[in-house]
Length: 107
Ligand SMILES: [Zn+2]
Image 1 (cartoon, rainbow, N blue to C red):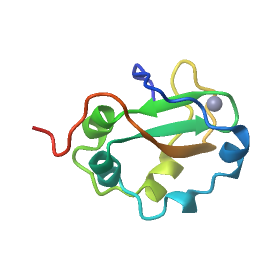
Image 2 (image 1 turned 180 degrees about the horizontal axis):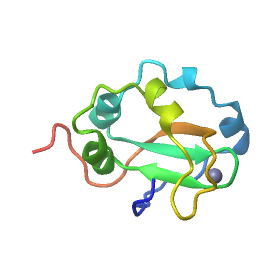
Image 3 (image 1 turned 45 degrees about the vertical axis):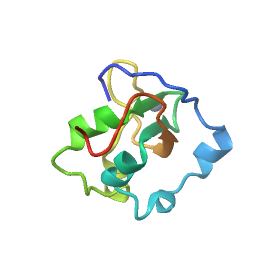
Image 4 (image 1 turned 135 degrees about the vertical axis):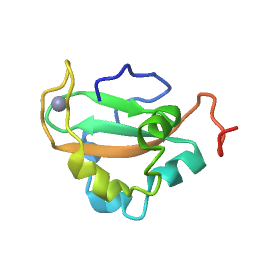
């Protein structure tokens, strides 16, 4: 999570949504599914106000070899890391429609 964040229209969801997040909510979702629909992955730390967006191009760069990775398996590996991170592993994730340039499959 240390790379530069490309901001789109993403805003941090309401706290109650973040606190209520359960990994079961993204059951069945994969990286490939996000890319096909043009969604970013919004990662919200539950221990601090940090919000990180992984845009479709960033997801492809990170997970190009493992597109079928399920979010339920990814989430436990995430942490609020990097210079601005608090180090917590308690994060919530949400798909967010990406309004940047994106097409799938890539040309
Ligand atoms: Zn944090």
